[in-house]
Length: 491
Image (spheres, rainbow, N blue to C red):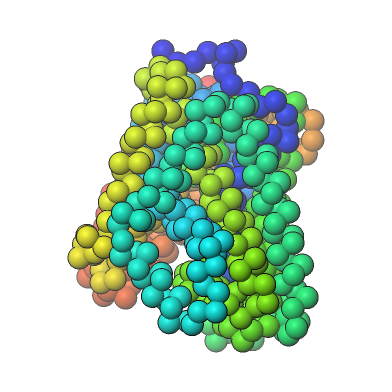
């Protein structure tokens, strides 16, 4: 027994839907990964490719997920059951989305905990006047202390639980509006401060003026794939997290306009994050291509050199914490909705059980950096977080996106006509019918390419035998999806 559509939670306003959905999309990938990818892959040239792939990859997958959520008025746990033709195997594919949001939270809470701890360290003035060696040691000590890291991880779980326990309107919508407004304000203050630093003009030129010859040295293929994968992953589409919020919205507005607005907000935050980081790096002679260590090793060094660095560092990590927590809240709500629909639970019971499940389930990721550091599942230097991120980012997200697109376009699934009618219901922009050939044939191939290329990048350095082994596992997943996709025709 599942919740009747007429009794379902709903947003108080369109702004609430946009900000909560944008909060789900806006996360660590925007404010951490995007700036260092720009630094590694040629600045403005990378951004142009990124924007192109948002248009042809990110937004179409997001539209499919939104359409299924609003059309079925359910989370990913029940949406296929409601919309799929009776007797088909499509409902089996819901486990991709359920697993995706669950496993994502098992390591995302840990990284969010890092943001919260570094926010606290900057507020205390821990890094004021300290050397690069001290900053590097601080990060290593954080990873080596399971109790301290566990505390901050638990705190991120607790914040998400409290907000979701309060409900959609009084908790998630109200608090996310405040958090997102503060995030946008902080971001603009930090960006303005950064671009007016002495020497920042070189960073602005690097960030805004494409340098295509540099891409030839890096390799066009590498740059294109990096831009394509970031454009797909940045919107959090593919695991059903965005679907739940579409199920809470009415049909007054068509979906293309809402998807574009959310994508624009997500992109704005990513671009402004670059304006915060890259000009400041150039102003103080710090390389912006430092990779994942940029936030925790490079940026704190930058603030030690900057006048008022304690204040600016605190504001920067408050900004990062808001971005991470908005995603924690949104994804936790998606998991709670899945449990409510699968087991016919009320919100309080589902919220408590999900909170305990995620808090306990986050422990392996915390221990993977210290007590269980000898466990290296994907090769030397990897840990539990790498394994969980690989399962989600390299498998469940692209496979989930692929299944959503196939379900919305195939005759034996929900079907193009039903999908298009749902997408275009309401006032606003419409999706033209000429997109059908691309969404039906081109987009699935593109998603398949993202999936297989992710495996190649992960395991190519470990040799052909290892790569072939893992590609064999990837093929098993694809065969299972094809088996579920096949079935009788829909009406």
